[in-house]
Length: 115
Image (cartoon, rainbow, N blue to C red; front, side, top):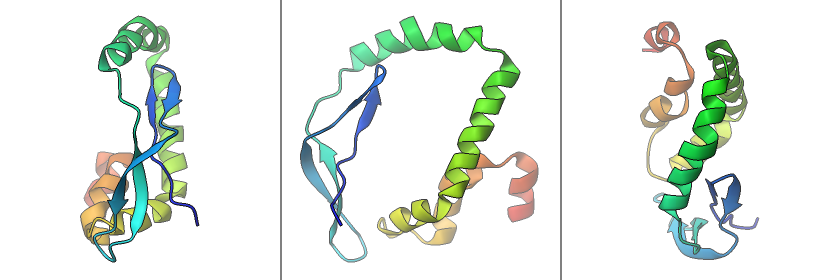
């Protein structure tokens, strides 16, 4: 299995084709991913956010934004076991990882039931 190079989504495009620093598992020391060597242009990211993303976001209705977030949460929940497997390489237990993986995708009522 090929080791992935992590990418960054900046100003409407993916950055990070070339692998740089290896990231190793806290469990077994194997390389699980690489950072990318391309630098991030934070000024470009802020200009895009302020000039393109924010105006587009402000044109959408609150309920439309909520639907998008709900769809994203569903997408992530369908892949939560993959996220737990990745998180395990940090040395975290499943309980440690729960708040990062599932906690943010649930409303307060579901979080109280899970606690």
